[in-house]
Image 1 (tube, rainbow, N blue to C red):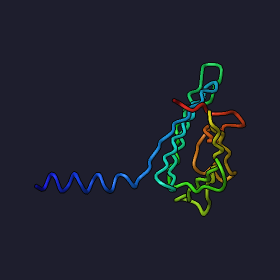
Image 2: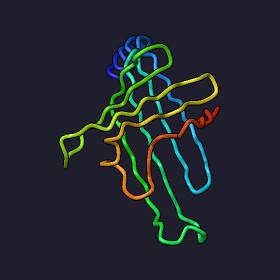
Image 3: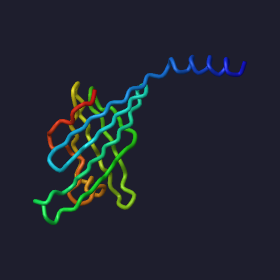
Amino acid sequence: MKKSLFLTIALLTSGNVSAATDHYVLRDGDYVRHLKVTKINDDYTASVDVDFDATANQAGSTQCSETISGKAKSTGENELILKKHSESEASFCELKIHLTPNGAKIDESKDCDNFAVGKCHFSSEGKELIKIK
């Protein structure tokens, strides 16, 4: 009886929730960027990570790997803003995410330097991350 009741409640509540997750990736030279956007009803969460692995021809450069994630706000059709507060400084990193049917572009504010070390940066520099289908 308990199983039937639990199953009925789960089916009733799950019909009201609409969830979707999209992944985007860009490999650009020594950089790999990954964006994950999850939409549950009208709420968005986003996670952006960047990995940089220096090759032999970039002497003096070190590898780095950084991630920013949290709630994102929709600021228009196909545009999200992810804002993260720095724990060590009085600044915010703001990532503007422009979604297209086949990909996404990421722009970062100047204060994002507090979140990434070395050559790591979250901006896709005008290049499009490809949507994984």
